[in-house]
Amino acid sequence: MEKSTRDRVLQALMRADWISGQELADQLNISRTAIWKQIAALKEDGYIIEAHKKTGYHLADRGDRLTPLAIQHYVRTDTLGQQIIHLEQTETTQRIAHEQAQQAASEGTLIVCDFQTDGRGQLGRTWHETRSAGIAMSLILRPTAPLHQAGQLTLLAGIALAETLRTLDVPATIKWPNDLLIAGRKVAGILTEMQTEADRINSVIIGIGINVHHTQFPELLSDRATSLHLATGKLIARAEIVGLFLNTFEPMYKKWLTEGFASFVPAWEKYADRLNDLVTLRTRQETVTGILRGIQADGTLQIETETGLKAFHSAELVYWTEM
Image 1 (tube, rainbow, N blue to C red):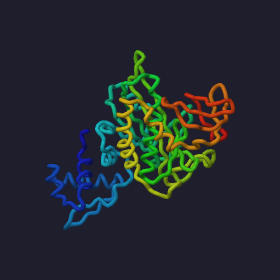
Image 2 (image 1 turned 180 degrees about the vertical axis):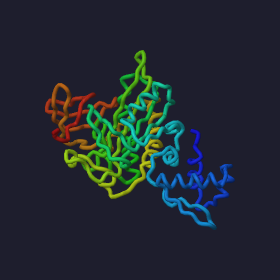
Image 3 (image 1 turned 90 degrees about the vertical axis):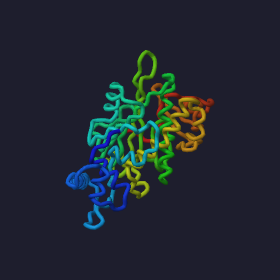
Image 4 (image 1 turned 45 degrees about the vertical axis):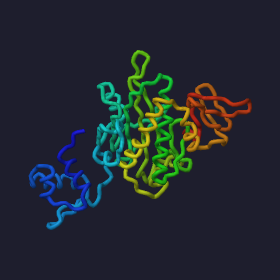
């Protein structure tokens, strides 16, 4: 990905403790005046940069940015996140990702934004947004896999996100099939959509929303939603979360392409919320109560009822009463 002059200046500041304006100019082959202008622009963007006549410039605070450069500072992947499109605001990253996929965007292209005006979750529900407080991202994949296996990528992304958050000491659990919880409250959601052509997958777009710095929610959500900050008291950089997720998800995705989902069942059950507890599950046809016994090799949910073990491919675990 070609970097702008501003990104190149920022990257140089990230690599050094203190660096003089002349050193920056020599490294980047631009004038001292250009360096000064880019430093001023970075300060306007929210970066805290100290300046000293003798020692030069020092990046005191990288800020909480979702720019490509901020994310790629953490990325250690071969494919995922090598192309990043950042938007300050958009209706939904899923729509942008669909457009990019139709325009032959490469696999691994990531769309991120600081504020979605029309974010959505599973079953068309609205995803609550607070400007610059959360993560809204959509990842374009082009798997060579049968259509019926595409839904497994939702579960795979859930495992990767749970592992990412636990790496950051956040005790996240997975609510089948597409939510992540902390102490029973939703902190993240996953929405997987497909583009198909002639009975084959053209692209799979994995949309992920994460509540990071939120300090409050609307009354309707106050008993069922949380954020990383509310749950842990921590201030975790959003770019770090995105980068670590990509690093975790990529090897899992490669393994899934060659071996399928069966080997990931133990990992999913390790993070599963209410495993071996009584749950209520709702489908279009019925509501079922039973013991959650895990998932099968293809990702279907297993519920033990009074009449025996039942498997569900498409359903919703009911945790909260809808108002």
